[in-house]
Structures are given as C-alpha cells and as structure tokens.
Amino acid sequence: MSEAVSATERVWTTGVAPGILPFLGNAIALFRRPLDFLETLPARGDLVEIRLGPRRAWMVCDPALVHRMLKDPRTFDKGGPLYDRLRGLMGDGLVTCPHHEYRRQRRMLQPAFSPARVARCTGVMGAEAASVGGSWRPGQRVDVTAAMVALTTGVTSRLLFSDSLDAGRAAAVRDCLAVIVRGLFVRTVLPVDALFRLPTPANRRYRSAVSQLHTLVDAIVAERRRGVPRDDLLGTLLAATRADGAPGAGPAASPGPAASPGPAEPLTEREVRDQLVTLLLTGVESTAMCLASVFGLLADHPEAERPLHEELDTVLDGRSLPGPEELTRLVHTRAVVTETLRLRPPGWLFTRLTTRETELGGHRLPRGATVLYSPYLLHHRDDSFPEPERFRPERWLPGQAADGAGGALLPFAAGSRKCIGDTFAMTEAVTAVAVIARRWRLRSPSGPVGRPRPAATLGPRSLVLVCAPRAHLPGRAPAPLDGAPRTGLPTGR
Image 1: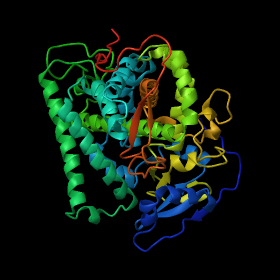
Image 2: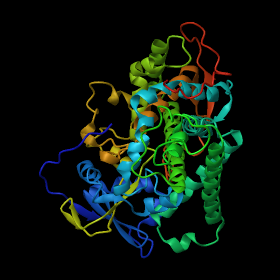
Image 3: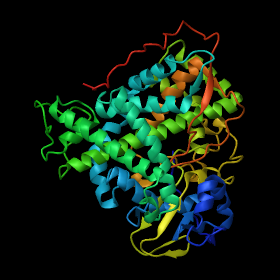
Image 4: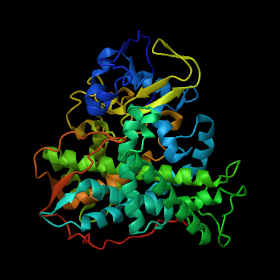
C-alpha cells in the first residue's frame, strides 16, 4: 500500500522537540499522551531531535525522508530501543534480525505467504470469524478486542501449528501477549535497563510472560518432532533444521507446498523458536488490533457502515463466507480496512539504528544513532490526507485522490523489509469484517469509542460493544454461524 517517493530538491528543516527533561527526556510526554506528542512534531521540522530517556534520537516526520531511510536498510538497520527489547522476546527472527541475515530468512518463509497460498487460506479465515461471531447473541455485550484476539489466534495457530494450540494453550498465548505489549512500550520510551531489572510486580509479570511464551512454543516444537510431519509453517521450519531440507523427525515425507528449499545453512533450534514467536506476536496482535479498531470506528460512524452493508449484501448474495473471488469484489470493505490502518495503524512507532555515519534531511547522523518514524504521524499529516482525523473509507475507493497519498501510507513499512505478511493480514482482515459485519451491527453502550491509548501496538485494549443482528438480510437464508465448518489448512495438492 505504499510507493517509493522521489524527493525533489528541497531544503529540509530540523528542530528539537519541546519539553525535554533531565534524565527522562521526552519520556513523560510519550508515555502519557504519545499521539498528541507525535502530532506536534512536524511543525518543528522534517527531522526532529527527541530524547528517549537520556538517549538522543531523531524522529523523521516527512514521508519522503522515511522512504529514503526504509530503502537503505544497510545504513538504517533494525535497531534502537524497540528492537533491543523485541530481541529479548523474538531473538533474531524475521522482524528483528540484522540486515545481513534478513534475505536468508525471508527466502525460507516467503512461499508460505505467496498470494496463491494466502487465497487458499480464506476458508480458514472465514471459518474462524464465523465461529467467533456465531457465539454472540442479540443484545449481548461483547469484549470485541478479546474476540478479535481469539479470532487471529485461531487463524495464526492453524497456519503455524495445524491446531497444536489447544484451547488452554491459545488462552495462555493471549494472556502472555497482553502483558508483553504493555511492557514493551514503556521499555521503548524509557530505555534505561536498570529500571527494568528492579523486582517490581510489573517487571516480574513481563519476565514471566516472556518465559511462559518461550516455554509454550518449545513444548509445541518438541511434540511435533515426535509426531508426523505436517504441511504448515512449523513443518517448514523443522525441515530447514537439516541442511538437506528433510524433516527432522517422524516418518519420511515431503515438506509439502508450504516449504521452500533449505537455506544455505540449516536453522538452529533457537532460530525455529525465534521465528515462531515472531509470527505469533505479529500475526495475532497486530491484526486483532486492526479488527477491533474497525468495529470501534464503525460503531462511531454508522454513515460509513451503510455502504459496507450494501456491498456485502450484493457481493455475498446469501453466502455466509466469502471466497477468493468474492474478496476481489469487496472494494468498499477493503477501503474500510485501509482507512482503519491509516487512522489507527497497529504498528505506530518504529526505531532504526545507523550502521555508519550518514546524512538524512541535510543533517549528519553519527554511527549508532537512533532514528524513529511513526506511521501514525505520517497518516495524520493534513498535507497528505485532507481532514486526517475523519474516518472516510471512500478516500480509498478506486480513482480517489488519496490512493497513494504521496507514499505517506505505511502500515506495513516499505522497501526490502516490508512486512512479509501484508497480503495475508489484509486478506484476513477483509474476510473477518465481511463475515461479522454481514450478520451483526456493533454499537457502543456508553457513547463514542474515541481514540485508543497506544502500547507496543495501537488499538482498543478492551472494547465492549453491544450486538444487534441485521434485520431483513437479502437473498436466501444464510447458513448459521454456530458450528461453522472448521476446515484444516488447504494443502494445495
């Protein structure tokens, strides 16, 4: 959803963020009112110096400069406070690994995220959405955030583990991720290690959640090694632990279409865990926050919901679940998801670390400098998106001026390290919105939902909405959502 930006010759401006305090820097403003703080920075310059605790850092506020940075991952490598913390959780998985390791890892995982394979997963996505929505009743108050986390945990579990995550383990994963995303944010804005070594209740909860998640994933891997190889991402990773690409345990079998040729060097046991934890965190948390934000925004903007319902009634025509062909015709539904990603991007703040002395925006940066960019900041610039605070899905319909918006839309980053799962995440989100919104209207029982408070991701942490069934659904009677078929992952054979 982003395009390279060719920056014309111009004079870039630099500035300093207000309110820098001794030792704390801008941490108080970032922690208490992070979105408001970010929105003040473009007026200070294209490149603005801030302080993360005592550490100097630079926020890139112009989309052209952000693209310049993202297109040069050798110079602006994954690093800085966010990735320092994430490596304690994910190790050197695909999201956190340094530049020199990235191509090897991406080549191994890419086949599982090809458009053709993603299209074959729409049945699983729709069935999980139907299972979640099928448990609701008219007038029921639903924690939509928890429901969306359950939905994305189900989809991700079946993609990664072929249902190795039973109900108890899935609940444990959700609980761990809830603690982790809260702890990651404060560790990013105040990167002072001594504070997080203290035996406070919050620090103990964070360390326990990380340890529990690692233990859970290790147990699943050990069980799979003792069992029959399966055609899923865990099977791909286990096959890659041997140089010849053969399965590491169980009866001899082809790794199936999800697997790719073994990398030049086999994966280690630690790398298998790192990739699984990475895909769990990114696959569950980010898409769940996007979906919760979708339904919160629709609850606040019923005028945007009407054309969505009209499209779903027309395209689905009585079907309960969309297939790949129907998804291509759900143009307004996709626009709703895209506008949600603009207004409430789950990944809202990222850091990079310079590997050499370099220049950005006319400013010399030393080797080891922390550089940040914020999709939220870029998505709320009124020179890229008129009326940036308004929820207007129509701005993403074909032929509208916002399409591209000068490269300012960056929910999945850009360049060679653009999110490997962007197509999967969009397909999952559009499918889930279609399945649930076709059957239900969700309304807030206590006034406008409003803007969520960010943690490591941006989205409503506990969004409670009331279910109202849609009356007079056109076409033939839809199949009941209760007990919707839970088909396994398609093998493509």
